[in-house]
Length: 154
Image (cartoon, rainbow, N blue to C red; front, top):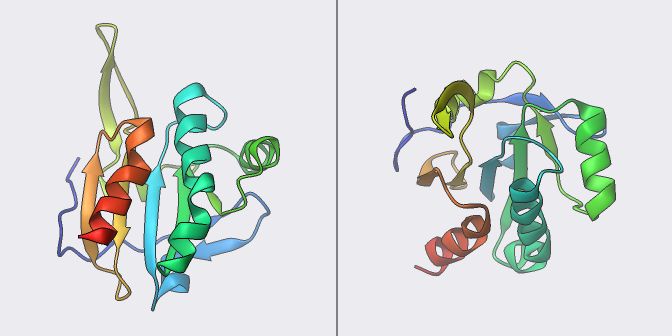
């Protein structure tokens, strides 16, 4: 799994959101974008992460920052997650994990001594031209927003 670094061009994606609309990285050209990858909708860590992003959306919007979340969930699961927690931003469905592989967030993981393949919780700050400004791999669920805010303030 190759990891993105500051200065890399963010890999393009075209994924369905929770409403069945196709969302592309290029749709955000001219604006900053926070992209965060999470393992599974409506699980404790992913809920903490997504609700924290939701709670800071207005602040992010004032800074010219859009947000998308990406997981391997189906659209109906993403929609239920969005509706349950009133998230209000695109939750993208990377069912075949092609985007996660391109962004370096899909690969071998260990949990309780067992090895498996899955999503590594990660977040990325992308600039207006589609370049990676910051990449945070293995970010804790409650650190996506603080890390993004720190990067935007710095």
